[in-house]
Image (cartoon, rainbow over all chains, first blue to last red; front, side, top):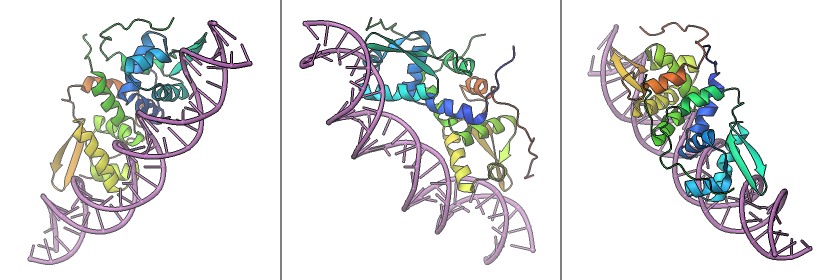
Length: 106
Length: 106
DNA sequence: TTATCATATAACAATATGCTTATATAAGCA
DNA sequence: TGCTTATATAAGCATATTGTTATATGATAA
C-alpha cells in the first residue's frame, strides 16, 4: 500500500492546527460524528466565539466541512481532504472518547 | 499489532512542536542521522541561537538527545521516547531528503 | 413583521512564539 | 595561559495565537 507523501511545509501547517488540545479533540470528535456548534460549546465548556474561531481555522485548512440543517450548522471531518489518510493516521493514536456524548441538537 | 494510545494533551504538545517547518524538518533529519548544531545552522541557513532554541524545545520534550563529541554536540532523535512510534509514524509521511547532505563536522 | 436562537465576525487584550543581538560557557589548541 | 571555535542562554522585539466582549448575520417561529 503506497503511503501519501506530504511536503514538510504542508505537514507543518496541519500539525500546527492539530497542536492545540481543543482543536485536536475537536477533529477527533468530528471524525466520528457530525456536531453542531452548540454541541461543541457544551462539550468543551468554552464560549461560542472561541469554538467558532477554532472551527474557522480547521475549515480554512479544509480539514472540516459544514452543512446547514435548519438553524444549525453541522461540522464534520472533511474525508475528501487530500491528506485525510495522514490526519486519520494521527487521530488513530487517540483513545476512544470516554463518555459517548449524546447528540444535543436534532 | 497493538498501537500506542496517546492522551490528547500529550499528543497536542508533540504536534505543536512538530507544527513548525524548521523543527519538523529538523526532527526528520535527526531521525536519520546525528547532526551537530553547526550542520543544522548551515542546512537551515538560520542563526546559531535560533537553531539552538529549536533544539532546546525538542530536547525539553524528550524528542531529541545530545551527545558531546570533542567540541561538537551531536543531536539525534530519541528513539527511546515513549511515543517514538507515533512520531515515527508522522515522519514516515515526509518524502526522503533530496540532497543527501554530507556530514560537515567530523 | 418582530423576536429569538444559532452562528460568525470584529475589536481588543493577554500571552506565546520565534527571531535578533549580546554575552556566557566549555572544549581544543598555540 | 590566552585565543578560537562550538554551543547555550538571556534580553528584547515583532508578530502570532487564543481567548474575551460586543455586534452582525441568517434562519425559524410567533
